Length: 90
Image (cartoon, rainbow, N blue to C red):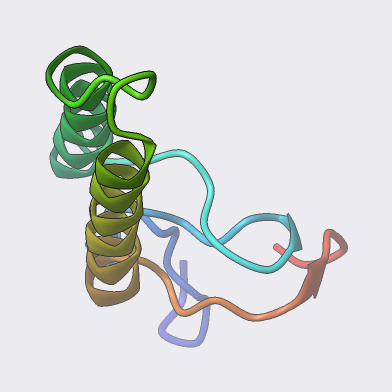
């Protein structure tokens, strides 16, 4: 690679690379991202057990909403800058 070549998301230190098609982030490319991703799903599983949707739908949805906002905040802070992509870029 020369000085003008863009680095891969993993080499640049991003935890979440930008999606190849569309807008947003793809699956994690570093262990830190995977830990955040697994933590998000652990919170969702725990919410389904401890804040049962059939007993408190508002509490369950609030927990899912808060966990999703936290995941998006980490993706924005530690992810590649998102922009619309058509898949024809490297």
